[in-house]
Amino acid sequence: MNGRIIITGATGSMGAAAVEALATRGVPVLMACRNLAKAEAVRSDILGRIPAADIELRQLDLASMASVRNFAEGIDAGTVAGLFNNAGVISKGYSITGDGFENTFSVNYFGPWLLTQLLLPKLPEDARIVNMVSLTCRFAPLSEQTLRPAEKDFSQLSTYARAKRALLSFSMELARRHPSLRVNLADPGIVASNMIDLGHWYDPLADALFKPLCRKPEVGVQPALRALSGQSRNRYFVGRGDKAIPVRYFTPDLDARIWAATEEAMR
Ligand SMILES: NC(=O)c1ccc[n+]([C@@H]2O[C@H](COP(=O)([O-])OP(=O)(O)OC[C@H]3O[C@@H](n4cnc5c(N)ncnc54)[C@H](OP(=O)(O)O)[C@@H]3O)[C@@H](O)[C@H]2O)c1
Image (cartoon, rainbow, N blue to C red):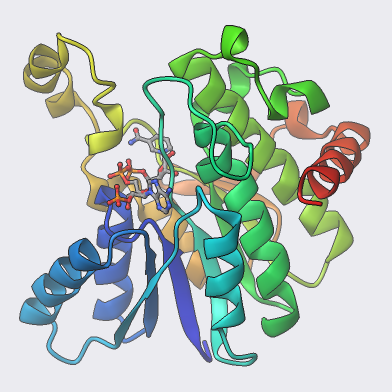
């Protein structure tokens, strides 16, 4: 692989595990993180174990399209081999970003959409693009209207599931429009990370009872790591293997409409 792998949300549980796993293999990484102090702490921790690790840090806030544009402008063509759209959030309440997007949708969908589009001209034709989706996609209806939910339509989990379903739709359409790219989906399963603390009074109880049953971040990120290092295209990486993308996600007309609605929203 020539060039860095950009990992968004590299301060998070699976993001940091991905940085360390790639660094162990000698792959240069660019941590794209909203909190640079936190990113520096993750990097120093990894350098303590892998002194030769080649890890660069840059600021990226996916809740701000100006930040996404600024990040993409700072990337030189030919220096990046792949992009792992890993960052994600399950917002507790309804909030709208400065760009007018609901926050969960901005971080999980609109931000990665714009980032990928802006980086494309700087990436090799066969660049690896791995989008982190979720088993919740299965239960999420998608339409142009769901991209920008009103407050009355917001719910913590269903808005998250719809945003991930939109990211999945984007991946399918991206692969159709750029068949030379290696676009793949990664589904980590249920992972014991900060993300599954939904901010409820019973979270400490859930931590004690539920988290031990969940995958560890180093395990949950394995499907994404396999997608990042292999030659596949349009595969769904999950568990210990990968499979054809489930037919329920073959919605080309919808994907084209979602793409057009997103382009319109970015104007
Ligand atoms: N955990 C699960 O069971 C599970 C299941 C299916 C899919 N996933 C997906 O896996 C990915 C990684 O999740 P995780 O479990 O490792 O969660 P995590 O530990 O909470 O990590 C989330 C990462 O996203 C970053 N992030 C949040 N808001 C951001 C923003 N506005 N701009 C840029 N980065 C932002 C966080 O940055 P800060 O450190 O600054 O907060 C953090 O680095 C996510 O896409 C998630 O949806 C997780």
